[in-house]
Image (tube, rainbow, N blue to C red; front, side, top):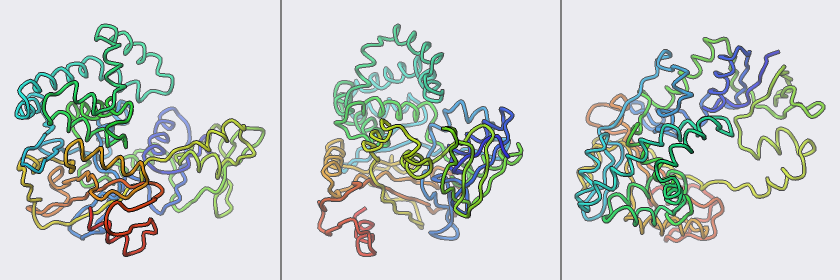
Length: 421
């Protein structure tokens, strides 16, 4: 009987299992799918010569994570790669906002939109340099993050804490308007806020846009060499080297509860796996509480909270095996790993408003990855392994475009949405 059973071999489950092994626990990980990784997987399903990331692709938070740093995944063969530029947002008139690897280069590019915006970006980055490390530490510390929180609070007092708190609570449209005279800096902030599924007018979107933009400026948007699956492979290799057990194709049907304590799990095949000390679940909250634990073991207050559980936007993704680089009319976009495709901040607002109304956007915001640009091992020289995704409502009420997409997602609707993207 292991000390802990971990349900799910996604990145969170694998990291948790590795941390418990480092603490001297014995750990068994049970994964429903036939391979580990969850949303961190890659394959050659589009073309045998092209590596495609199935779900997630860029990992700025992994690069910044002190937890992953302590795992030393380089010892398991993990290597990171960067595109020449972090991120680009081209416009129809040929201009392009670019988040470069060096802050001086980002500032120089933004000065082309408005001369004062170079200083504005440098000021935002200077604030990040003061408080960013403690903010990141707080994000990766079990709640409440007491030590890092106290350090962060002390620095905020000397960095104009109330003003910064106000900035981070602003909608990203308003933050961009206050900080930048031109469109470039506004685009970089607003596009990064959409990484967090926050609309330009949403409270707090300014803070998330700033966080993602500054992570990109300080750490880049790195990718694992060879595909996202290399990150999973490193976590699995470390897990097994430390004595952990991973079993795939083992769907957990329920958590065994005795006397109010989780004491093990039962698989869909009828096997019971006990746990001496803990059961951890790398699943959605609704699946954990309603399906695995069961409502009979839960307080009524938690059940009421589950009724208010809100999912993020749905995602629609297209992968390409391209015979050459994307022929951008804005040449600065050519060297960026990530490209935001939308007609300015107004285009992002229009897109988000349609989703809020339950409509399939007629001009979807596309977040595009140029993976061979970021990692030359992804496809043959001179080609590009690329993908783009957009968001959709969880429940579709109407199609703002001409294709009468209803959310059945039969072949006709899939093809229509792919053509639109």
